[in-house]
Amino acid sequence: YRWGTRFTIYTGLPGVVGWNWHQRQQRALMSNWVWERVAEIANFYTTTDPAAAQAFLKKYNVRYIIVGQLERAAYIGEGLLKFDWLNGQLWQEVYRDGQTVIYEVPEGYEVLP
Image 1 (cartoon, rainbow, N blue to C red):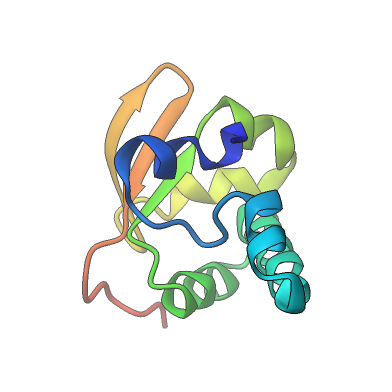
Image 2: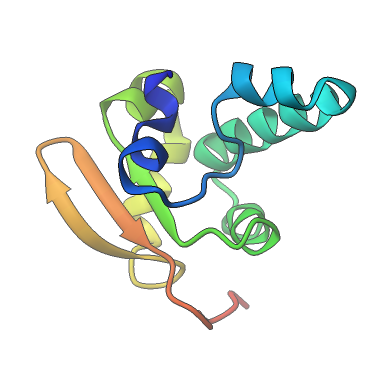
């Protein structure tokens, strides 16, 4: 397994894509589906648009967001700043240890205007 799925592996909670290679093996006829999700995850972490981030959360019914060393290395740019400035609006910080932060997306969170 790869570190990108480290939280799904250790918690049993679902992820948006799962382990990329495993998904492509198991869903050979749907491999475009896997690549689309990988691209959407990258867009979620890099976008500075709150509406785009919110749409991603709703589309995949995301409950937890991880921003750790791996995400900071893979998704460089201003998009990561949104996690601080949208904290309390789209998600709530529930855990922090060094550079690793876990945000929870509350059920029934308010839609941005």
